[in-house]
Image (tube, rainbow, N blue to C red; front, side, top):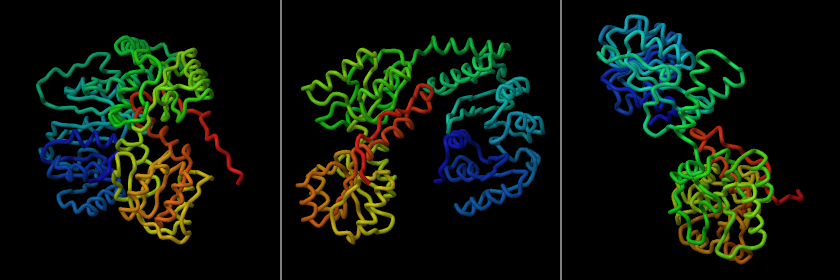
Amino acid sequence: MIKLDKRLRAVVNEVQGKTLADIGCDHGKVSVASILEGKVKNVIACDISKDSLEKAKKLALQYNIKNMQCRLGDGLRPLNYKEVDCAVIAGMGGNEIMSILSMDLKGICRFVLVAHRNTIELRAFLSQHDFFIEKDYLVYESGKFYDIIVALKNTGKDCKISERQLYTGLNTYTDDFMIYSRHIRQKYSKLKDYEQKSEQAKTIANIFKYCMQTKDIKVKDIIKEIEKHAPLSLMLDFDSAGLNQGNDEDSLRGVLLAQNVSFATLEEAREKECNLLLTHHPSVFGEEIDDYTKSILAKAEDYKINLYSCHTNLDCCKEGLNDFVSNLLGLKNIKIIDGCAREGSLKKPLCLKEWAKTVADELKDKNVKYVGDDDKIIKKVAVCTGAGARDDELVEYAKNNDIDCIVGGESKLSIALKIKDYKIALVDVGHYTSEIFCIDIFKSWLEDKFGDFLKISEKDIDPYKSIG
């Protein structure tokens, strides 16, 4: 299947019928994906640019698509009457889309629209020209919100929309109120910045108040989103992941993303007005709490900062830390070893010394060390981030399953000697450097719905220094 970003994925999901017209097809991804996924049997890809049509043709050829025509022309003009059931018009401004919809519609009844700007004007146009808006929802992609609008012609239904719907859409998705709320907060923030006093500004300000009254975002909303990806049921027996201190009913002010709970990150959370410190490593381990941990917890309570950790459940879950690092190192055919660790193959064999340097470069770790002969050929690798190189069971697994090298941290001398005697190899990486990617993962999971609340720690740094 062809890889699509969130915006194009939403567009293809709304395609239906026998024949699609992809207006302004550009690279042809929507056209090709719609056929590959069985959304339609035929596609007519239209564009005013010959270069775009050539790109679309090349993509169709790459996927052996036979039932796709490419036509040069403006808007709907290249189409014949009743030739098409559904038209996609995306990747252009609202004014351009309105201009196209002012043409002869060639009997098309279903339109999937994505405007990069002037969406409010587009909604007004649709309502005034008897288009029934069946769906109107938001997709967040790479720092931008996209309104996905499905408009139907000749339904006989009431096409009027309310003032709120005009400015913010129909919000017809199921459970993405957080994205909708974030969109309104962003609009409201811009209004405050520019001190606009227009009727539109007053309307959006009222909607903002409605959003804030309807959904007071709480600490538990962040926790729910995290645990959708990394449920606590994946946590290993010795672990203390979860809400280590605080009250998940607290209204959310901000979230500081870090690897560790320390005095530095607590001070930073307070400075950045974050009342949730979301970390990989728990602040509490086991039943006995030492004086340092007690002082950390006391400081967090004094600052009214909630402490939540996503630890071994993040190591083990799909697209968690071990998957992330395995992909970062370029491994292929990745599979789970024991819940947490992963194994995979290098894209091409490397000698151990070269492989160790590759790992050091990818993890940006100046303190990587390794065990084994420099010229040992590495093909198959086991990865276990953090303190994974301390695991005797992983060493035995490597020995019995033709693993050439283990990548992990905090190996003991006894482990290193065993690995050497077994004629395996070890690349020993820093605990911090192999797990700092937790921040990238947290951000990817939370950005769409809670991006306005997220802050990245600047004070949670690797405590180790290199003499090199």
